[in-house]
Each structure stands twice: as C-alpha cells, then as structure tokens.
Image (cartoon, rainbow, N blue to C red; front, side):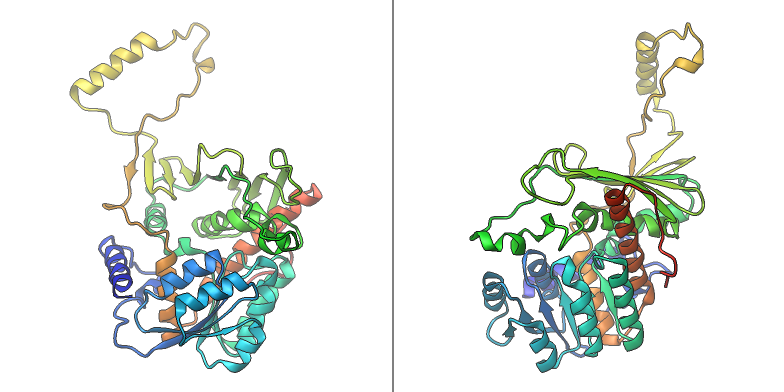
Length: 414
C-alpha cells in the first residue's frame, strides 16, 4: 500500500507542477493536503474488471477504509474478498449491504441497466455515490438519479475520468485562451479491433458476463465508449446538443450480438457547431481521438497536441529543401487554382504538456471523490456533466435505432 500511496502522490504532484490546478476547477483543489484528516469509509458494489481497477486506485488514496463489498457473481466476490482481506465484509445482495453497513459512501460499478436502481437506493440511504459511466440506460433513469441526488443533498459522481485527465485539462485551458480561435467543428472517434467478448464458463452465464452485447442491458458502443467523448465535447462547447442524426449496423461481428459494431453520428449544437462521431470494433488503425477545430488551428485532446493553421516556416536549409521538393513534385495548375487539392497541414504539432503523465485521470478521480466525501463538498456541476453526457449518448442510440433525427428531450436539464 505504501508504494501505491507514493505513486498517487507522485501523480498528484506532477499535475500540480503541470499547472492543472486552475481557477474554475474546484474539484481539483480539495485533493491537496489530505494526509492526517479523518478516515473515509466506503463500500463497493460490482468489483468486476472495471470495479477492481477502481478499487486499486481507491486503495492508493490516503485516509480511506474499504469496509465492505458486494457482488452476486462468485468469482468476482471471491477475488474482492481476497484483495481486501478479512476486515472487509462481503455481501451478495446490495440491499443488505446498504442496510447493515455504517459507511460514508459507495462506489457502483455494475452493468448499465442496474445503475439507476442501485444509485437511487444508495442516495436514499444517505450515502454519497460514485457511479460508473454511462449514467443510465434511459432518459427517465438519468432523471431519477438526478432527482435522488437533489432530494438527499448528496454527492453523485459519474465515471467520466477525462474531467481529471491532465491532457484534457490543459487542452481545455488552451481552447479557452483562444489558441485555435472559436471552435467551429469537432470530430471524435474510437476504434478497436476485437469482438468485445469475454470467456463464458457456462452457457447460462452468457448474458451475465457479456451483457454489453444485448439491448436489455446496454446501448453498446454509445454507452461504453462514445459517452466519454460526448462529455468532453459538451465541456468544450459549454452546451449540450439540440439534436442528432445517426446510423449504426452490425457488419462484421455477426455472432448473435444485438448492439451495433459500428456507429456514425452527427450532433448539432445550438450555436451551429457540428460534432462528427464514429466508432467501430473491426479496425484499430486510428485508435481514438477528440479533435477541436478552429480558424487558427486544431487541438487533439486525447494525445494533447496543438496544430497551427499557419505554422512558422522551417529554418535555413530545411526550408530550402522543402521549397525544392515543392517545385519538383507539385503539379502545374494548368486548369486554374480551383482544382488543386487541399493538402493536409505540414505542422507536426506542439505537445501541450512539458511531461508525459501515465494516467487517464481515473486515479485522480477516485482521490477527488474521497476528498469530497471527507469534506462533504457537493458539486452539482460534476453530476451535470454525467447527466448531459448520458442524455446525449441515449439520443444517439435512439436516433440510430429509430432512423430519425432525435431531439434533446423537453424538460431534461439541471
């Protein structure tokens, strides 16, 4: 545990040195000087693959005690018990845990269709809640979670760790300072190459283990991947989309799954900005990225690079070589300039941070949740980010499923 604690402190110190603790981001300030303060007691519901990762990050946070855990799948239950040790009590029904345990908050990392039920129960039990993304499966479920947070006056985090990602934070700062001008278009994509399946020890466990494949439990690529990028896009544009058009299909992994293996959408925002999003799981060449484009340049938020529309000329001999190559290889515009293709920018990009930080923000998000529970700092903005990303995610799914333009639902706002 001491090694984990040092890793956490190192990550936090790197963030501070990189200038991430800026005004307007209060959720980062409370992370400082947490040693020596009162112990926070948490439980976890759903220590599966993602839940165990969250648990490992939590155990690196000073002043935290994990008092209990809950899972109804025996291998996950046993693994969590071995990891946490005999002092943590295990439950197979989350309702028993909420009723019997004395704790400050709970981390929920269960399949999507259970988010609303367990989150509302935990909030109504008087607990602060961290719930994994996406917020919920339906518009109504998202709304019920927000109302439960409001009536109980408790913390509700949704697992959008890019709010705590140093590259994203620095990119937001660059955009707000006008380095690329007004954002006129955004593009985002998330590409993988795998069937997304997990081994099933027995056929009757197929839907329990591979729940992401079926509409009863999941909205597929939208709630598993797109929701992350939609949260960042809403944050950059300081707004939420008013409508979306989308199309999806299963064109590669024809193995009985119900959710699409490729999706393509265009979101429209009230100021006229469009967001182009696509995701697929049959090709990974381009990986993932969020691109914010303006008249002065482009910022790629996932990798943390800025590209100028008018990069400074290369010095000396390099410029001479470039000019010679240009003269030799460029076509003569015999038909006039209008037909000459637009070549991509030659700018190689400028990295926005002076060091590479080996974190996607999840470790800092967990530390922030613990710090907020400790000080009872309730930030409705963080809940709003999860809510608006959740609604935008569901809008995209509904557009694709119903072959129609899907508008932002009336009356859904915080």
